[in-house]
Length: 221
Image (tube, rainbow, N blue to C red):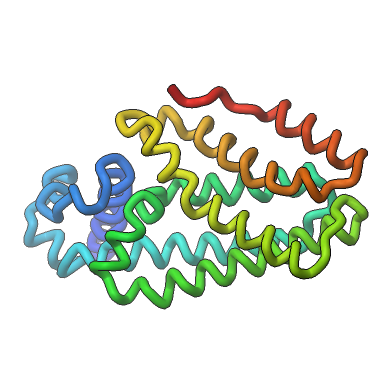
């Protein structure tokens, strides 16, 4: 039993750090704050993670693993409702690791190891969006040439990456709190899928508008 204690402590450190980073922003959270949140000594924390960079890199690795498990679902999209649930799942993952998006520029300037990892994540998400768009085209929902498809995938990627920054600017005191989770996720999914409206055939367009209305979240104050 005792052999499991270090592992549990390491996981508790990550859970605490993720919660604090998400709430206050990674630049505003020190390892001392994380240790205090857990009621452990800074030395105990450093035993598991010698510095905050190690915590950030580990959390990013968990996010990347979750993302790689989700992205293959793009090839299973058969209709607009599937597309909605895929996009909503993407935003749920972003929300769970929202400090990465909230503080992305700052993180990249401080933690060089993230540079290539983030570039790969962007490329993987772009490829998944291309796959989703191809699926919808094959099903007769979308009408796009290859240039339009690539452009749409890029616009979707940009919206996904910066949506929480937009939410934060509009309401810095509340936007990234846990109580806004469902609204922030739903609004993001709606805006990304709304980018496809100009390319949808008449019947799928009506279906998309109905879906967006059905799952519409109230605007943040």
